[in-house]
Every structure is written in C-alpha cells, then in structure tokens.
Image 1 (cartoon, rainbow, N blue to C red):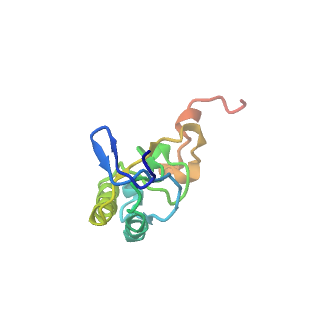
Image 2 (cartoon, rainbow, N blue to C red; image 1 turned 90 degrees about the horizontal axis):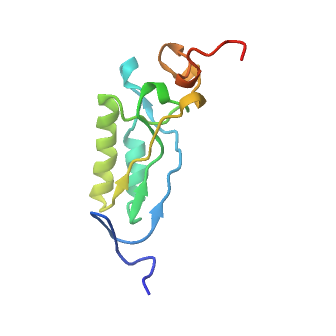
Length: 133
C-alpha cells in the first residue's frame, strides 16, 4: 500500500511524494514598471513557493492569462514579459529546492472589475450589454 510520502508518476512528471499544495490566492505581487506589465511575481512569491517545494506538486495561485481577465488586486499574470520574468524567478526557486509546480491559469470574465482593468474598461462579458439590464 503506497503512503503519502511515496513518489508518484503523473504522466511525464515524476513527483517525489503524493503531497499536493493546492492553489491559494496570496495577493503578493508587485506593480510592474510599465502600465502594461500588470501585477508581477516577485521575490516574496519566490520565497513562499520555494519554502513549500517539499510537496510533491505545487499548484500555483490563479494566474491571469490576459489583462482583460484580471479580477483581483495583486494577483499575478503571465501575459507580459515582466510577469514571465517574475514566474521564472519563482520556478527557479521551486526547482532549486527540488520541487515541481504547475500554474493554474484563469480568466475571470464578467467577474473582473473595471477598476482593475486597463483604461478602466468594462469586463469582457459586459461589453456591449444594454446599460438597463
């Protein structure tokens, strides 16, 4: 009978144990230098995930795939160069500690709020809707 601490093969990925860190929003990003950078993964996030690299698999917090899908303040994206550099910092720290991480991708659709979107635009799901609805 396998234990929680036994390794596991998940498709092409070999996990050192069967412990999974589920996604939890941390809201720890930094603002990018440019308005188009968005919320950027940083050293604090790298430290957080690196400290948890003992888990067999880390599933990162939800990560915006597009500026129009940003729904919460200080949540990371993966659509700008600055964000990709930030995630490389995070994954390098996880790998340095022998860990494996998958990124949870998301787009919040109508849940987005104009105060968090570029140029305070309406969320994608609300564009073109009648104002009286």
